[in-house]
Length: 481
Ligand code: SF4
Image (cartoon, rainbow, N blue to C red; front, side, top):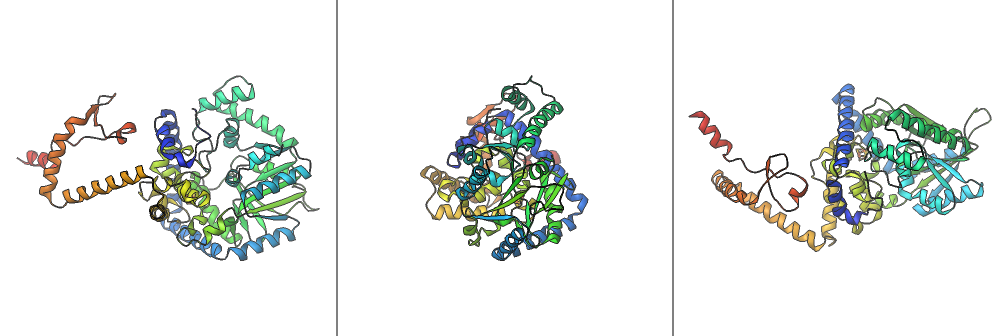
């Protein structure tokens, strides 16, 4: 399935229309998101809805407290990392962070870096920066490895290759790895493992993200299912962990809460297969681990987000991806349509803050405001409220384009008309009667024989069902006589 790696948030409308006419993408998205959402629901039932709500409240409270005292906890975390022999670098921008990693690699004579899945690395564009510096980054998470081979971006926060079918991956491996084509998942996985194991054995530097950073102990926590993170952090002699400054939490007791929520929200698992707690570089008593341990603390606009009371909660995100899986918009268009690193409802809130409201004016409108994202968020981020707030800002700042303004006016007019029509049952009957007469002019027959209405833009990619020939009241009256 071909996807575009060059999409931008500015062309969201066009990106979405293209995605909507891609049946393979639609199928892949439906299968993966429905599966993840159902698994999550079952996992919540096992915990018990009341306990689950308590956990969410607790997580929200921990995040609120930490974010409001972020300077204190960051200093504490950084102090503990350095006390245990690690090196901390404070990166104000994405460029600062990339430069630090690339220069460190150059100073140590490193030519190849193994990487684990990290949204922060995507956010700062680390792979491009490393390649520009003559260093080869190798993704070791299977999904990330697939999108790297395809020269694409991940299209989901924790399922990077969700847009690819088995057949796509078979084609890709045959083309890029020069092997015989197979669609057997076990064979494809074994092949990727063989290729990557060899890279692990030779790499001198490993780069990872961070799921949580414990201020009390200077520990970083990494969760995964494949085991590649363990290899990335233990085989190379240098480990660099890159994290957004919002990833810090006060202590190990708080970690319990997030571990109970994260994997259940992400994939419905009770717990991810591997949870690694790494504290400092290898000491003389340790049998394994890196000689050098670096933590890059990335701001990249987060301090500004912190000062914004209306949107500050977006820093509570633990990147579980649950809001993407339930979002009716994401489920139809996938992640690439959003045009930047973070897709779905959280992406629609983060992207305008990170790259500028003027570059992402369509994203906060990419929501039906059904509220499903807020309902599933394990840290109770009020995503629908934030989307509404951003819409207001876009409107107030005059960022809405003329075409969108016209559409907006038309929408308002339609709703006014609808409100008038719904005021009394008599009006409603007249309007419905009129609608039945008019719809005859715009009826069309679909390929499967069903009938729907031709409505500009709407019916290009979905059905607009016609009004029933007789209203429910009329049918009921007939049955009663
Ligand atoms: S906003 Fe909430 S649901 Fe969405 S990825 Fe972040 S933590 Fe998960």
